[in-house]
Length: 287
Image (tube, one colour):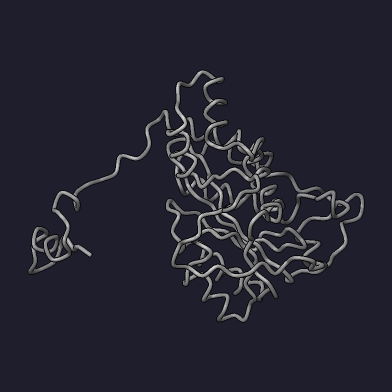
């Protein structure tokens, strides 16, 4: 709202008009310390192995690794990362108090075709000097990643962009399922689904297991790409994640689909015959 190059109003006057101090305009956040970034990386790795760890158990784990940390610090970092233990509890996510929460529509529903149900989730991506958030839109039946976006904040805009891209490229699903996170309950996000005529479903109490497929995606992505690369910049992360997701969709076979890839399942194609030239993983191609 403050334009440093305004032809008539000084920065001080503009700050006064929007009721902020001039020092607030010049303030630049310092970000997390190197130690906190290292702790966040360790927390992320351990959470993939033990997603039921809350802040108390995670703090115990870090202390056993030689880090002198308290529960409050770990709780703040886990909240910053968007991590919450996945045991059953009265509230499994943090919806915005002013946002509408939609009913869960998947109970007893047989999902047996592509574009019947889509789902989404957000994960934390550690980098060499910082971190990003990744959102993905996935087709429930085929496990294909339909679209994705990276962001350095947990606002809803990058989730809306990913949703709009998925709808533009792949048509629309019958049902769209998410958790009750504020990004997915926001009016900006739900209005896109309403305008497209898509039924909105949201996980309720004790339904965390419905996210297990996309959680497996995060686990594979981090172990096969993110942890091996140690991305320095956002552009490096975007390129690396993009290569891996293309590999995941088009060349990574799934045992549950008898060796077919998500792309083949999504389009109803059979797996290639024996002797077909294999496609190498992104890391092998880079080597």
